[in-house]
Image (cartoon, rainbow, N blue to C red; front, side, top):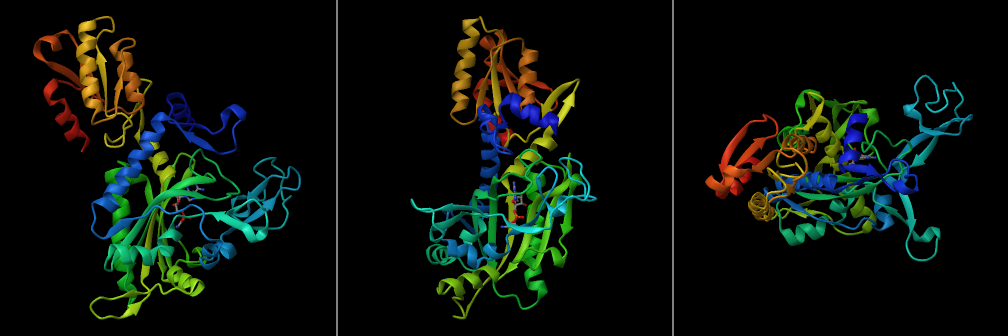
Length: 431
Ligand code: GAP
C-alpha cells in the first residue's frame, strides 16, 4: 500500500485533501491523472450498464433529499454502527473492529466504555437557522433516489419490467474508523443499479436475477477493470448480519494488501423500499402490467459498486515492478493517457514539427501526453509508471518514410506504424 500511495502522490493520481492545512483526516483529492482514471472507470460502467442496454436508464439526483426519505428507508433508525471509546486515550472505534479488548491507538487493554449506537448519516441544516425542523442529511447511498424517482422514470421512459435505474454519484457516511487510503472515506462515490422485476412467486424467481447480476459483477471486475479474479471472493452474508432492507447479500471481497475486504455488494432488497416509500409518501408507487392491468409493487435486486474502491483495486492489480522500475499495467481503456508522443531529440525543429502535428491530431480523439525531456529510456519509464500503454517516437527516418516507432508498455516491443494509420491503430488497441 505504501508504494501505491507514494506513486499516487508522486505522479498526481491522488493526494491528501487540504494538505496545506495539515490535511483533513482520511480525505483525499484526485489529481490530474487520478481524475482521468476515475472518469474512465465511471464512463466504462455507464457505457456497459446504461448505454449498451435497453433495459436500464440513468438518473442524476440531488445529494440532499427530503429527510422523510431517510425515515421511510429505515436509515434514521437503523443506519448505525456500535461505537466504543478508550477511557485512557479517548479514541473512538467501531466496537466490531476491536481485537482482544486492546486499544488500537494506545494499546491499553479492556479500557473501553460500553457500546453506544452511532448514526452514520451526515447531518446539515437547510436554510439560515440551525433548528431541528430544518435538519437534512447528505445521502448515505445513491440508491434511494432510484426508489423515490421510480414513478417519474417509469412514466417518462415507459420501460416494462424487468428494468433497472442506474446512478453514479457521491455518498456520505460519518464513518467511525475510515482508513486504508481511499478504501474507506467519509465522502465517496457509488455506482448503483436498482433492477426491478415482478413479484416473485418463489425463491427461484428472484434468484434468477440475483444470479444474472452476480455474473455481471464478476465480468465487470475481469473484463472492464482488467482485475484477475484469483483474489476476488464471494462472501455470503449471514442472515443475522444482513442490512435492514436485505433478504440476501453477497459481498465481493478482494485480497487488498491490508487484508481481505469488501469491494462491491449485491443485495435482494425485496419490495422493502418502494413499499415503505408508498406508505410514507401516500403516493401510488405500483407498476401496472400493460398486458394484464394488474398492479403491484416490484421487487428489486441491487448491484452496488464503490467508485473509489474500483480505482484502488485497479491500481493495486495493475501495479508491477521490473528491474526496480514501476509499470502500471492498466487496461488501455482505463489509462489516463492512451499514448505519449516523443520527438527523438528536443533540439531538432524538423522532428518537433512532425511530432507536434501527430500530438495535436491524436489529441482530437484521445488523451495524449507530450514529452521531450531527457533520453528516450527515461521517457518510457516515466510513461510506464503512469500506465500509458503506447509511446510514439518520431525519429529522422520518420521524416523520410512517414512512419513512427510505437512501443508497447507491457511487452516493450516496438513496431513501425504509418503516421496516417496511427488513429485507427490506437482506436483498435483501446477497444
Ligand atoms: N445501496 C447499498 C449500499 O450502499 P454498501 O455496501 O453500504 O451498500 C456499497 O455500499 C458500496 O459502496 C460498497 O461495496 C463499497 O464499494 C462502497 N463504500 C461503502 N462505504 C464506503 C466508504 N466509507 N468509503 C468508500 N467506499 C465505500
